[in-house]
Amino acid sequence: MRIAMIGGGYVGLVSGACFAEFGLHVAVVETNPDRLSALREGRIPIYEPGLDVLVETNARAGRLTFGDDIAQAVAGAEAVFIAVGTPPRNGDGAADLQYVHAAARQIAQALTGYAVIVTKSTVPVGSSRRIAEIIRATRPDLDFDVASNPEFLREGSAIDDCMRPDRVIIGLDQKQPERARRAEAVMQRVYKPLKKIDAPLVFTGLETAELTKYASNSFLAMKISFINEMADLCEKLGANVQELAYGMGLDDRIGSRFLNAGPGYGGSCFPKDTLALSRIAQEAQSGCRLVETTVQVNEARKAAMAGRIIAACGGSVNNKTVAVLGLTFKPETDDMRESASIPILHRLAEGGARLQAYDPVGMDAAKSLLPPETTYCENALATAQDADVLVVLTEWEQFRSISPNALAQRMRNKIIVDLRNIFDPAVMRESGFSYLSVGRP
Ligand code: NAD
Image 1 (cartoon, rainbow, N blue to C red):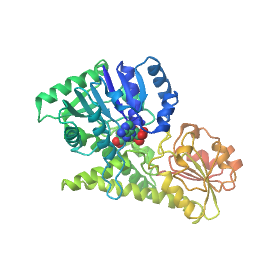
Image 2: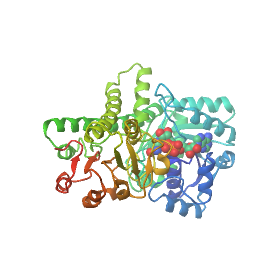
Image 3: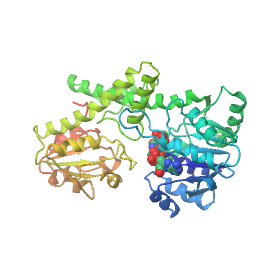
């Protein structure tokens, strides 16, 4: 079976490679010349554990190709996936659909026979029907169906999420049952290998599938904002948020994941998807106060964490050296989009701080987003050199094993603000640090 994937970014490249691993022939179309030439030369333009091997194996087996010629890619494809970006539109928080709509027009012009056009990008409710309208307007003669197949992979564990998903949501045009059946048959074949591992394929209407993605991400974001507020409360009451989260999470109605207090959620999905869902609800004149509040709590969180670092330095960071460990929005990715490090470091730079930072893979992407005067260091210990305060912003595994004594030897003032709770407070205090973390006494 042949399929085409429009967009070779975090979603298109990973899911394209996983489909190839399932045995499908996948043609990835990528228009960014840097990303495309990297892929053609066998280099992976993003950091995702295991992706290099998966891409290399499947490219060598002839099941995975990369190009910018959409006509070539969609020739003979039974399904064409759209996996282009849907960033927030400037100003109102709604998703910017210009890349999705452009892809729909290009697909319509290029197709020579029947295919299902499948949206993997996260798009507002009504987008799949709009894509169908665009395709009909571009090519009135074309026989096609649309499907909504939102992607739930998480950067850092994206391959496992694609190969062993908790569920696959597939929205079809149930108002046209014949068409829905035809498209379902194609999607069943695309995802056939998942039947062996009993991963549920959930077939819904188009609107439900589109909304399920926003609802899922907003719910997870809400969990994070909730535990961040609990962390503040723990600090006021002398309780411990890690123990509280553990106790809560053992209840399987709640679950233990997404209950880590920290500097606020970031990334390419939660911030934009919570804003977009708020916008979708406003347009539908339906209440969405929990999600709106989640967004507000998260914004306030980042500002408060910058304030916490400044307070730890005695009320001013002017001329203080702040060492920052971790810049990406979470570990195991080079993705800097909407990372909490961005507003926090800008706030510190405005306050006159000298910033020296280290991230295992995110520094290249960070350079255009962080204050230009930031110094980038070779490793974690070099970052601590002569620092007045050390701040942990991303919980990379390698930071957990840093020796407190090695830090103490290098730092000018022994102050740590650990916004990811990676260190043991007792050990840090024994090593002579003034140690602040999140929601722990
Ligand atoms: P991305 O920016 O990394 O990748 C999109 C790619 O599409 C870019 O490389 C861009 O050059 C390419 N592109 C744009 N228009 C094109 C066209 N007409 N033809 C060919 N290529 C084109 O974005 P991403 O992180 O992969 O996200 C894509 C979508 O998936 C978004 O809607 C996002 O919300 C959603 N999503 C992302 C994640 C994630 O973790 N990144 C997870 C689930 C869903």
